[in-house]
Length: 308
Image (cartoon, rainbow, N blue to C red; front, side, top):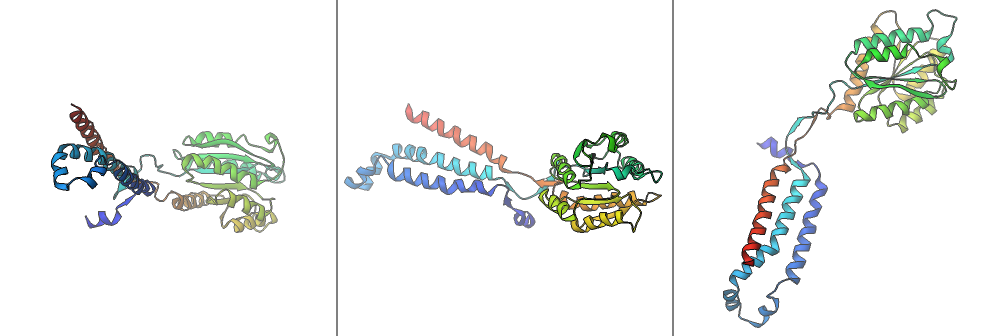
């Protein structure tokens, strides 16, 4: 019981501002609408009360009933609460949006399989591991394009990723700064929960430009899966951007250790954005609704009785 009172608060405290407003209006009408105001100055108080007892009682109720109703209604709208309940709209697993680079360097022919082919294999592994959990895909080069919004049918994401290539991109380039805000737009359908995974062999965009884009997008959790050999210029370009974003970098591996790390990081970083969304404060203001309806009904009944 003590804990309940400690947690007691109003979900919408701004609604309580209606109470002093209602009191001020009630005081004004009490001062200006008193039908006996003039008689009080001319007649003995005891005699006046004896002559107007019934009428005064009815008038007093009429004067104050709507004030009481307004105060109780304000309390109901403010949403009194003292305990939490499970949020029925909360997602069990936060979404991950893949930002797949489709730049020309990803399809280089000097290595086999090339970075893009290896990236598709890793995306297929990730989709298999996240089966039933929201996974989305954006392809970017000189422009960014939504391939699929987060869906629980992760096999479709893997199939669509397999069709991505530099040839289908309308503008050549390597503009990660354009892909980040596009991915964040997809996360809005999940109340901003989730994280981003950049799969690329290099990043040509200036780290400062990418950092500004990331900040304007609300600094969503982001990590990188580097498809370039460690120690190369391409690898350093990814690490420079990751450092500017305070993000982690997983390096493409021959086993599943990179995917294990990606999933663990996605769950860990997304937990901060989903904290408090799995539960919500339970409203108890609706319990005041019967009281409000009863007071309104009694008010009309008294008015009808007085009019007979």
